[in-house]
Image (cartoon, rainbow, N blue to C red; front, side):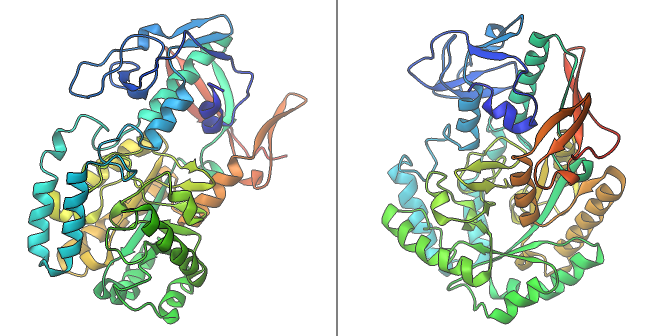
Length: 454
């Protein structure tokens, strides 16, 4: 269905409008636009498609047509969104067998020798590798909302075709929260493991719980007492890779061998979530790890060794695994690549994400905030998130709570009981009806005044 992604995002009526293709899809796939600033990748039924973002891209915006009860689109939005969220456009740097051998060889050599390099030397290598990151045209820095932009435009066209100015849908977050923020801690070394207790003290000062992504093998010992100390304080444990050597997805055989071990650690850690080391990922293989949720895909990966990005600020499914994307810049990149210790970038990203009612997912390593200077920046971030929670109604849960909510919301439905709207489904007592309104061609959202579960 052309409107499948639209229905999944809004949980609104399937009778909105009929979406159809305006012509036969091209055999080739490539980049094109849907409006001046919205980059798409895939097949289209109009114009041309480019293999490079350096070329001038054809804009299909004028080829989308709205008529009575119908929307004619020059592409399949669900397929285009899958191409973005699954990073299928990034064929030159995904770990899916299409990565150039030269890049794969360099990556293998670096991670083989990495333990021998001092930290300062590693930082210089990383800066050289990432040189020019701020000139990459896509995904859009510092936050990419392409998926949301496509779906909002499709919803607006559907409303125009149906002759309506508002439509009810199930709000994105429980209790009508305006947005969501997650704090996650990747524990990379013995120093970070040993600082975890102090880090939990700091988090508790601001009333913000977090998840700790723990490396099972080689980096440091992981006694049960350490895992219990995290869980007993109301924090969360997730599995981080197997041994953090950068080779999880290097070959199919090696991935399968490691995946079996990782699944055993999932049970041992009593974890439902996973994150790959260094955010290396192969989204075709990811579901085989068999976690309920994953947090390995950046929204914009300009500052990560594996570039790309999912171009969305909301969770989405990869098979049965819920992907909770990383939507803000990691602390390591902020401190050591950009060279900043202020909140300016994080605040800008938070503001942009809040403007889309999306998910702010932070990675802060205990290993990198032991010293006073970065620790102060982290405390400032916690204070800012506390203000967003108090003044702008931002939800700050643990990752497993996002996983549970998003799965529950996906089974909820809006029902009409004699002219009074309600929501059915497990967990619907936490859900809220919202209204998308079309004003001067622009969408705005508002919440219903009270709970509407039935």
